[in-house]
Length: 146
Image (cartoon, rainbow, N blue to C red; front, side, top):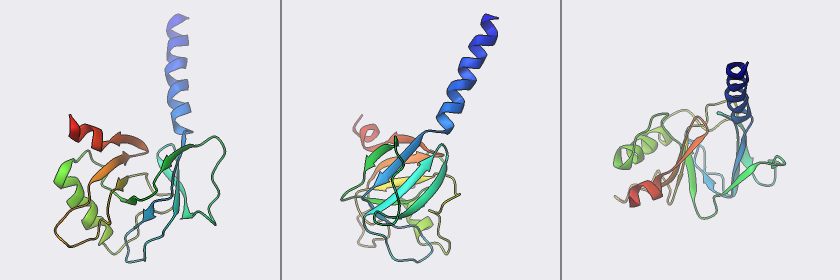
């Protein structure tokens, strides 16, 4: 019986994680596909999937969501792997220059929050602040400081 309760608790926690809602608010969104950036964007992630994308005027914020302040930052599609440093910024730049938009409702939540436009060509790569792989966030800036 104890084993059954422990298994239920573990599966219950896993199910609760799938309903976690995170909203990145205020970042400039570069979604790839050649579309112009969206200033003051909203990206809603439920569990491991992007459920809504748009500007703050037209995209409602779900009640009870965890809000991530993206003001003065950029959000872009990212690889679904645990790349770090220069490899991660090169991968993000390649994705946003690609022919297909990658930050859309229904897509896996592979995202990066950066301190500059990931498409820039001035030789200074944008630094990644946070990297989401399937909705799970990693603080990149904190890792780099260690």
